[in-house]
Amino acid sequence: MADGKPVERPLSPHLSIYRPQLTSITSILTRITGNALIVTSFLIVWWLLAAATSAEYFAMANGFLTSWFGDLIMTLSLWGVWYHYLAGLRHLYFDAGKGLDIPTAEMLGWVCIGGSVVLTILTLLII
Image 1 (cartoon, rainbow, N blue to C red):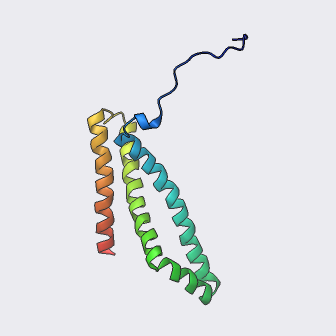
Image 2: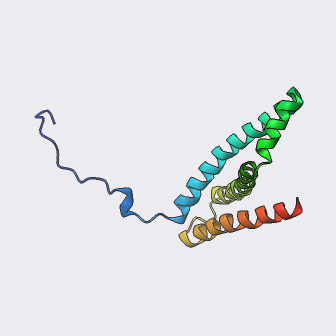
């Protein structure tokens, strides 16, 4: 080690070599939806503070949140709430030591994705 000669070691495979697995995608989605829900919480707090501040400021905040872009953000946030909830239930199931085999874990990943879409549509229809 002290001779200063570089050691010949194999390089780690790059991410492009691996096929993304459903379990890794659902884990990444859980992290993304959790962070996106923080941003949505700030938007809702901004809307409530605008309502408490003045009618003009509330009109601006309400105009943003009820625009097509605000509707898109809130719809995606609703999906994020349902996905994050179902992924949390999935992890509770995993923490109990169940469903850790690959076929069950992948099936539960598809349940989280499909279930969150169905629950989002049902919620939008009810509201």
